[in-house]
Image (cartoon, rainbow, N blue to C red; front, side):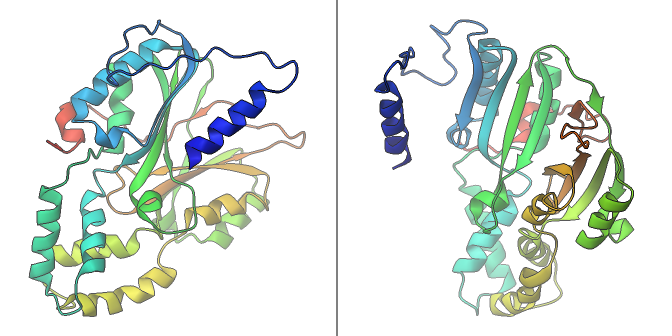
Length: 317
């Protein structure tokens, strides 16, 4: 068990000679109850793999309000394992398609998916919610929405994401990369490698990269909404076989590219992420080993105007 491993390591640290004992306080209370927690008391606040159990988006807003108040300037709030609202239908389609017999018709599978979505009891959140969050809490100076790392295709890597909120006054310039559209430019991994190696831009971004993890699920949702193509689930699976083998780009391949060129990479969703795409930003390292373009990368495009908070999540209740 992970918690047992952590506790054993803490115990080992505490028994080391000359080790100063840290102060540890355990409080048991609701997540939105910050009673007994002083303002600006923490450098980092972690909400990992828990917000999906919150009763709604308003509750999450209250929790984040307390967290923003409790974190010190230059501090962070990490929100991990967030379920994606734009990909919620793709998730249920993936599960129901996997469980269905090959003879099941499109109409029957569509009914199963809609029924499963109607009974969803966990909170799913649009990544755009965190983008507009700065307009509710101006103390948040930067929002970093990240795809999950990993080479295996599963619920976590496909349908969840992590968010890092930086709190405090603006201390670094905001970097706005020059963007290339992966699909319109017909880019490939080798073309990107050549671009970075030969032209050596300080910072460059790639929009709308097809996510290999999601192409089969996105195609399944499109098939359910249409009338043409395969008739049964079995026929659909046959058609998706080639997509699973070579459709889109694995995010980890772009991370691996940085082992060959002097760049770091950041990956975030394209827009709401409903079409199974992501955006990438490469930042060059200098010969001395430092980052060339210093500052915070802005993944956003045009200004996003906030909608009612209820529009950014489902209603688990």
